Length: 195
Image (cartoon, rainbow, N blue to C red):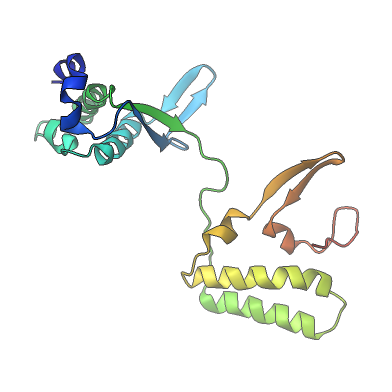
């Protein structure tokens, strides 16, 4: 089937997709495939499966995955992956395939209980009430603690989390920015770290 479709890709385009040319199918491969020198290592069946799922979603006309994937009682992981590769090959005139590595922090886990997190909020309030001239720091720390509590409650602010940390380069050298710096009242040189 794959070879036949490839030989007649334009004739059968309308049976699979509504677009002209090729659409890019891109999947994250961080943690699945890794480079070891000049070799690519990792879980290739998982990578192929993710490409097939994403490609199947992009095919507007039919469910090619259920039609052409090897899904019999005798199917092994190898035969399933082989059938998926053939499926991707069949659609190569309509799609290009790409894997990319994601940067950043892939996952955050807030441990403890909600009571722990609200207790932390209360401790920040109590520190402020002691009037220890720490407002330069607590003004930065307080909103971060509140956001962490909201996250623990399930109210996730993706924009907040996207700004956890960044490296910025200047003529005087790179600096670390982002709200994670709110946990540090002082710079390494002992000077106050302010906004």
